[in-house]
Length: 418
Image (cartoon, rainbow, N blue to C red; front, side):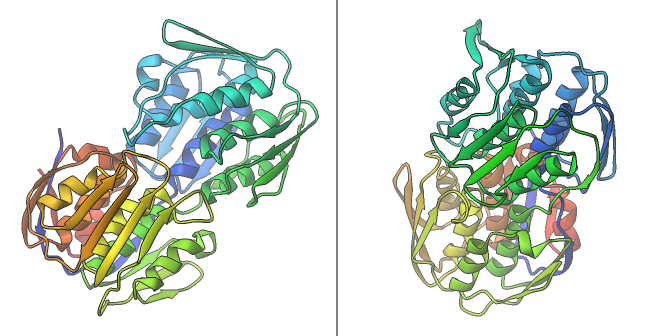
């Protein structure tokens, strides 16, 4: 297991380049299966989740060249319907292969996906979605078999505003016969990016950015060149790190028009001064962080669940108490047990709620990464803390943050891999 060793407290300064969005790149890579020929994707983050998904697609027959942050992927020779179950169990995003493979080959056989344990994430929504498209689903020896000889557009209402269900629905509908109306669709920035990519390939999707999408099926899609949207969660993670350490840094390569307004709103509520330009954000040195009375996560346009844990560290340095209400995943508050070791005044009330009272000093400790976002959270806590922190299971963080150690070192942090 990998470890990170961090000596704090840190004072950060300088500029940091934000990478492409993990949550956009993964479904877009899956969507390339809908085409034959070479797609060129730019601004792809060089992270382990991307490499894991590419390994699955490559074993299905894709030809891949991934250099720097540019990915060339040619799916002309894809002829498999059976993603390697051992690889599928490594990554939650493998579930995004169902829609494209079903649309391309009318069948797919896939095991239950893996990924971070952040609570109960059942597949019922996915099964219900494909059944509405007319697919038959059966389970045999831990493998789910999807078959759909004829995909036809339908009026579909999702059970919940699920990002994964929305992305699978859109990728299935673009080649289905007729028109699909998708209600209760998720509208996160990465969902919008997937839709824009599909439209560039020739799909006909309208309503992008809303909770109702209309998809008119087309005969085929053509490969294209596309640049992945910047990662708003990575950007906000560095914004928290700067604010919590009373530092001033500038984030570059960030399309600020695509960042959810709820993120900027909460930083302003916390008395963090931001200078926002078209492609950059400067976090000014903070003087007197204020508590956010209630941090409530929910699907877009509300505050994103992926940022709840990192933002909580800022609240440990704020004046007053903050109620965290994590509405989406009951396992997302487990990181609080780790930051309490460091001195945080934090109490878990139930699986979905916690209270943080600040400001409190934090102290370096041996702590453990529990999931991707919790790992980034512990890094921020260690940057705030006095003394040495050792973070175990740090390889989990590399699933979603490109070069986080090198980027923080460039900003002046005392951080190294153990």
